Every structure is written in structure tokens, then in C-alpha cells.
Length: 171
Image (cartoon, rainbow, N blue to C red; front, side, top):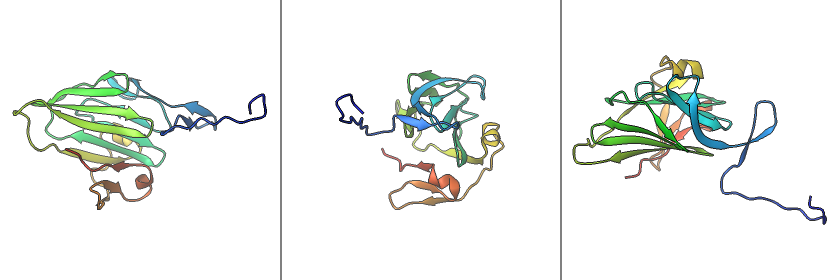
């Protein structure tokens, strides 16, 4: 409430805050920082979910209240993540191609930057699910129930599907 009796609302196209485990509201911070859970890795600073960026061999793990899902590039070189601001890059993950991620308040955007004709035409990822410790250590389940939606997105079946989906690829 303002001093003159009126109210002011701040409206944003994306979330600005999240409810922490203790019930308090905290500001979302999508910048990437060092990750103590993965030495040499990175993670987002503050949200009600955490994304962990390990080497390409460890993959990227999204940890939510509904469980965790990890994605590791198949046939990629072992490359450490390089973070800057809200972005993480795996330079030359594949010959002629960089793998990049952008952390937003609502999720993580993956991009593959094709730098020349030497890059392949297909890029695969192994998917693991389970609790955060299992997935971060590479022990998560290698298969999970997935469905392909009519829009081309991939949906996880069960509780994890309420919080995580993979958007349809765009070329």
C-alpha cells in the first residue's frame, strides 16, 4: 500500500521471485556460479529448481521438487563448462559444433551452434532420471517413460512431467 492509500503492482512476463524451502520469498537469480555438488561444474544461483552443468561426460542435470533429469551429449568430446552471466558453453563439444545453455527464470534453453560443414547433422543425448544424487553421479535410471506430444515436445510421464518437459527442436 502506498502512503496515499493506492496500491502499486509490479507485473512481469516471467517470475521474479520464488518461495524458498523455509517459506520466505527470494529473488530469482539465473546467473551461473561454481557448483560444489560437481567439482569443476556450474549451477544457477537461486531458484526453486537447480540446474547443474558438469563436463559433457557428466551432463546437465535439472533438479526439481518432483525429481531430477539429466542429459548427456552422446559421442561428444569431454569438455568442461564455461560460464558467463546466464550462459554456459561447451566449446567444440562435437567437431564443428558448440553446445550452449541459457538459464532463464522458468527453465534452461539449449542451443547447438553449428560452426561449419564439418559438424554432423545429428546430435543425440542420453537421458537419466532419479533423485539428484543418483543423477549427478551418473547412477540415475537410463530410461524413463516419455511421450511425444503433437507439437514435437517431449513430456515425462508421472510427477516429473508436472515440472519438466523438453521443447520441440527448432532449426
